[in-house]
Length: 210
Image 1: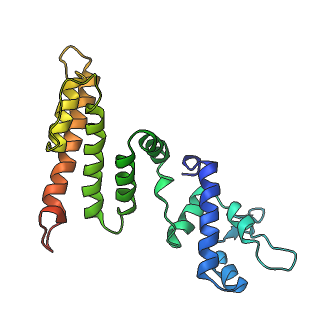
Image 2 (image 1 turned 180 degrees about the vertical axis):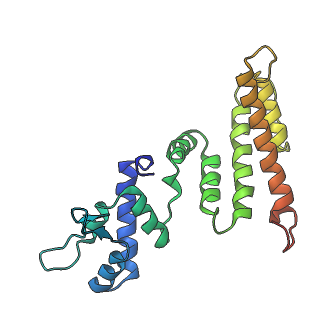
Image 3 (image 1 turned 135 degrees about the vertical axis):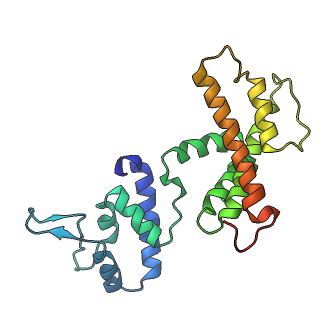
């Protein structure tokens, strides 16, 4: 886990966690007590500890330095415990978001909203993810080199079939691996669309439904 969280993201996360802890606890003593609950060591193993608790000259905890001494996985756990938003901890997310942000503003905004709703409102997250994928494919199909033109009412599944056809992904003459990727993309998007239609609040859902 540690190697999957980049140093740059850890720096940003530590700052957010630091601010959240200071806002939550009004005194240095409370901050110290909270941090101590995450701290543990082994005196029989050369006094090993999972992170070091630093102190200022006046004896108060140096929270920022202490947080920076934590591993990436530990600071992530504290962030989640403090309710700090951590959508970027999935390694592929920062790169994906940067690509979306530069080329597909609407899809980027929708994707960001979807990711933030995964835990609190999964139904909405699925609906937004479906919309983000639709936006991305529609933007691709707007390219002047694309022959197929969409009406704007196509479903995610239909859009996927169009874009796969345009790129000739499912050609029988292609290597089987390439066809498998195309078929997999079609199956995934079809499942997302079905999940949105049959398992979320967008098209009706009872209390007994998953």
